[in-house]
Length: 442
Image (cartoon, rainbow, N blue to C red):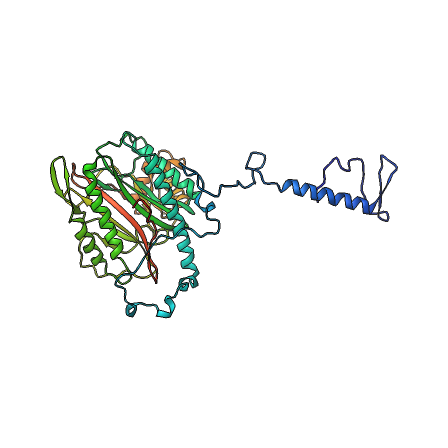
């Protein structure tokens, strides 16, 4: 029980003496029943006062902030989980499984009734995490596209604003939730794996075609989704070709569908488009050595690849698998090579050591930072900068040379060409296909 100091400052209470207490300063007897009644009333008053809800302040560090029940506009500032306190985040687009006949299903028809999936608690938890990450992705990218990115802006400024908003809406917490890989900001002939390093002065031009590839995750359940932007309408047919090719890949994907068949469907749509740039007409090509991929917890690129050209790959998609269906179109050769300064890195997924085998002390210390902050989640130099690391390039190179960390240089087509990318994350549920990252924009 808590009582104010001034309440009985003149009294010395004793538990002995037949239920009464005598004050040393005043010769007054206090009835024990009256005393207990008084103390109980004061206790209730104090508890009532202490239970009042207040905003977090320096004087009340443990008080919980009361969040609005609706998202703020035009800039979203309310973390997504507070808008869905029951944990029922919005579903993605629900699609039929197409050619998936019941005779080929691994589930008995009686198990395909509504609610059958709810029996699988782990599946439901992963779906909840995926939908949470997807809603963050939709909210952050809408704000970014509508209110932030524009020609004349430094790429690094745009990137850091987009990343910061995604972290804010996720309430990012090291490996528990946050960005699933470095934000891709690849421009024109650079197709993938470019993110600005610290000090990069690159500016977005009005004639640029720029791809933004963002990954969000909750407890390692990853949403991988990308879009392309341009400000010169002559490039729009290129974007349309790639967007429609991605949609065809999404429509074709399904349980027991062969990966090579998905690639063939994507290529057929992609290469049916033409784009005229500065008076010259180009047939849009699929970039043959880039592809989509399966996704596992904390592993954005898992073991299955989804080609974007016709392929003899007979590997089948399976139920309860996550896939990133991503396509790349180009006005160039349709083939990319690694070129340029690296920004993307990632620890080897199967490595779980502490670097004790390394001779270099700085390398061991950097590995600890990577393990603590990222684990197997890919990162970039700017993310190391955020952790307070300085002069780490030699140690980072040592980790790469020892095969503990992988380096991912930019993928480029021929200079002067333009490339575009669109991507969605899908989940193959036993009864349907859910396009988790689908939004009103793409």
